[in-house]
Length: 37
Length: 167
Image (tube, rainbow over all chains, first blue to last red; front, side, top):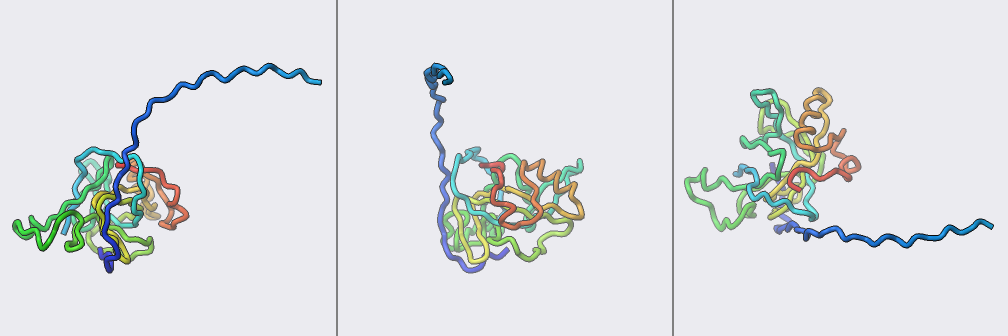
């Protein structure tokens, strides 16, 4: 296989993302039902 | 002069923007009938559970001489690396006899980018084009590699490919 004339030489570095723990979300405040008018 | 070998680091990158390329393989048949993707010019079976990593065979072929100024794989002064074309409309290669398969690959690590193709350090297959004469083998290869089967190498078909082994 022939790649043609060389245009560029470089490195594509992988990115290792930090492992994160799931953050517990507080319960959403309950809303009082609004009486229908 | 390269035979890409299987990656041994085990490191799986979480994210990056790889090179996208198009290439052709020979369809290898194991004694048990299982199909696999084999490089056209070297007896290298592409792994289905990790990325492929390239090594330079020049020292083996030239009896220990690594060539001039060869510092890494791939290197601009050599011909090593995992090859792919930049565009999907490439001519069929004649590196091996028997059935062929075409597909999409992603490459990363060191790379040498040419006007019509690239060579890179690591690569993973992302999709395979269905063979109209043997769709069953295409589907088998897709299952083995955990990749998509596409009807062509048109960009519209491959733009949303899922990650493949090694990603």
